[in-house]
Length: 81
Image (tube, rainbow, N blue to C red):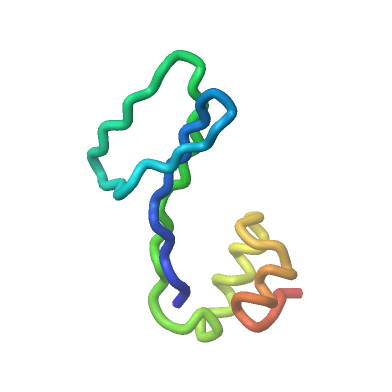
C-alpha cells in the first residue's frame, strides 16, 4: 500500500557531506581513512490499501513492537486494543 524508498548513501569527509549519484546494487564508492558513512537501505512498497489489512495481523505487529498503537492508527486506520 505505501510507497517504497530508494537506497541512499552519505559520505562524511572533512566536515562535509557528499551524496554519490545514482546508487545501484553494485556501486564503487571510494572511501578514505576517517570517512564516516551513513547508509539507508531501500524499503519495499506494500501491496494493496493498508487500511484493508487483516486487523489480527496489525494487532500481532503491534504486539511484536513493529508498530506503536499510534503508528497503527495512522497507517491502518485503527489501533488494536
